[in-house]
Image (cartoon, rainbow, N blue to C red):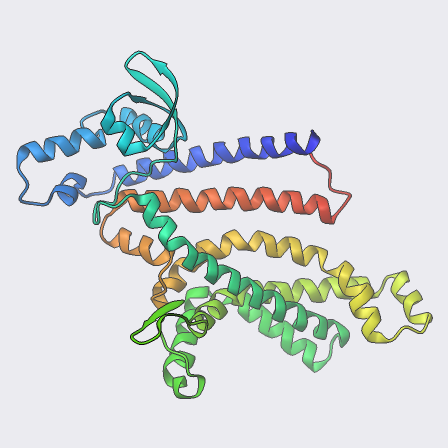
Length: 353
């Protein structure tokens, strides 16, 4: 019951955060220049078509009423007029009939793209796997190399290797991801491409004229490395610091006194206890990596949420930009709840409040 209460409390806080993001994004994009009716109907549309689109989007209402209309669209639990058109538009399940209106349960309706007229939710779900694969690959690279380099640095503190790894990690934290991405793309995907076999751009799946759809993991390497540099640098320093602290504990000295070899002491005793802060930090990085992937995807022409959102910004496709912003905020909330639960599992001193 305590765990359920904790999850419900975090979900409540998350809903308040999402509501704040929704209001901020709504007012931000409603003060920007641009005519959504012209984008949807075309410049040569007739007056009746423009009036119908204006009414459908609620643009004929005051701004506060437009906000309530948008919140009602986005909310899973909402109220709509009981019409066949609304049933097709929202694809809802009726809960309660209230006169001419119905209280319904539905998927959040993020409206339709101004450019393609496709459902924004469908566009985001189509591009989300690309961003997810990129973030997971970057996190795996950061964890494997970060833990390895952190352990190596901690075994020989203040040595040349230690100083080199610490200095490189500081550089990795300091350099912005998009700068590192440009350097990596030019170096390994252009100048040295005949040695690396990698290209500047590419997708996770490519169509071969003879063999059909092919999985191309090598196209994932450069953008994943570029995205994973910063968490890798942080994990190196976290692992090194945690390992140095653990290696000075009494139980490690006792294990050494019993005659255990160094490999067993490090892997079986020290590393297991040193990884707690690393695991919790890594889980918190996942949401940040998905948000940080936006510019990486643009640089490498990777088909994910970032590429489609940046293109939507360029085209003034406000529903798609607003939907992507809310979607990323939703991911942040879910991952933060997961991290809070993970803390309680890894560290018994952390209590559920």
